[in-house]
Length: 108
Length: 113
Image (tube, rainbow over all chains, first blue to last red; front, side):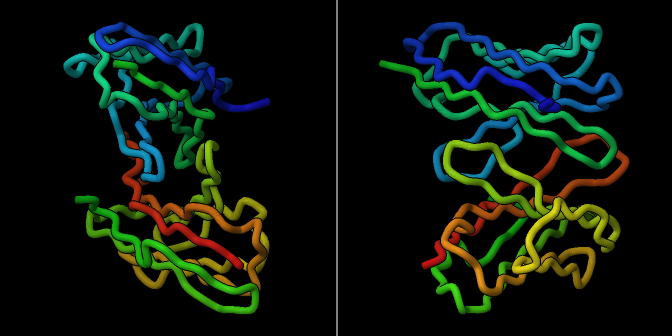
């Protein structure tokens, strides 16, 4: 059983579209949650932490549902530069668990 | 600019060579990690150092040998690697027992020939 599950996609969306990714985690004791973005042949970079109350950063909104053990990332008004792989990461103690990543391509 | 620096960025080595990957951070983080990432896969944890002590070894073959000389440095010594060890090797750091995610280095792209 995987700790963190994500739909790998790929998601191919037109510019300006709204797209949502979901991620589920298996351990209810998980403490912290993050979305990372990884461009091709680059390292993962922190996109945003996910807080219980939900949080927004510009076009990006992250939400956490502890009862159902899932987190989500919503991207509004997609840009070509949003094309990347989005990794869901869950922290338990000092261990981080990665989802398989969701591939997004924004099409002109 | 990344705050976790990895060298070299690219490395090609033969199966009989010995080489080392280096990682340095100056954020005061006391947990450091080595990950291996193959194409189109998420990073796979190899080793975790917490307060300069090896706390997790994810059953990594002995041809990979980590070393943490001090709180800012993390090395990965490589010996007698196989072609299937070719991958992107990522170093990361974080602050143990605190909120907050990783900071990754830009990685070393290793090719074993």
